[in-house]
Length: 253
Image (cartoon, rainbow, N blue to C red; front, side):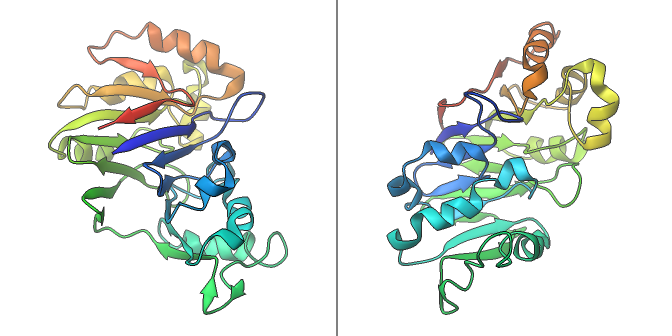
């Protein structure tokens, strides 16, 4: 399994792309502005999109994706959404006001996109497996684990402190990587907790719950504070290897 990082920033600005990860060439996790790194022909290969949640930085390019590949596909793109949030996407985005309702275009029996609630049962795609993980973020949200046959990768999406996430990760047999958000500097802990995010200090307290030592890849840093967050992460006293996830990075497992 190959994970290509199309976007890993917590906001926009020159050279910054929000959450979007391509699995091989046919599965997407989140559809933030990083999706714009793909050519339309490559976007058309995507059969499944798994959304960690429906905040704008994680779905910004979803409406534009559907419009960009309309004549290039013969089957709908399936979007898996936590809980009942697919209803909010239909009500607030694909509503023929903000954006056309592509669940009815070109026709109701041949739509461009379809929404499904995220299943509690792991998915399998030709030997590749994907399942959800619990997180603590506003609204309905999920993290994900991926298994390509040579170990697992865990991804938090957005989350604040969440013991259930680490318990679930510890239950996986061979976790090689954990991609975890770290949105704010430690001085902004109150805001981080209020909005369901982490700081370096909070992250340090979280990863002690790990039973193993996978590589920790920090992501989703707010642009105004990225330099400070990186500095603070470098000063943590932890046995875990922590590095900064970068756009364009490829992880194989």
